[in-house]
Image 1 (tube, rainbow, N blue to C red):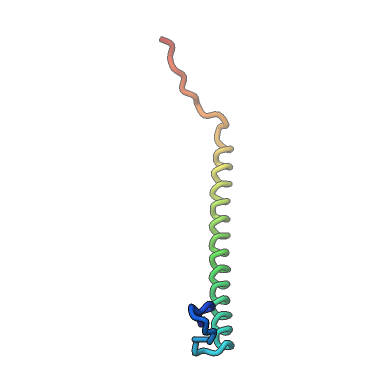
Image 2 (image 1 turned 90 degrees about the vertical axis):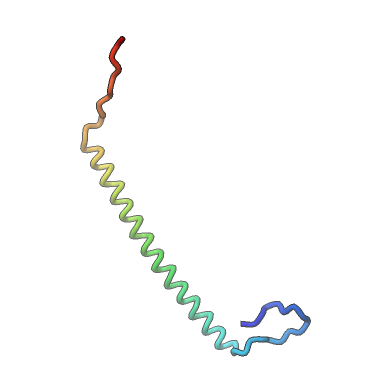
Length: 77
């Protein structure tokens, strides 16, 4: 891909590839990035499900035990 803003006043395209080829390469790169984002999204959703399950299990386990933990009282002097 050529420089979008050439330093000189000369506005020639310096790239040897055709615009159609550049568009195809850009589309392919965008598709690759899109697939990568979709896969990352799926991994993150799976982690959220795992974390939610852990939290729910701990809340259920915590609520199934006695609601009050024994309190250690200090002995009078």
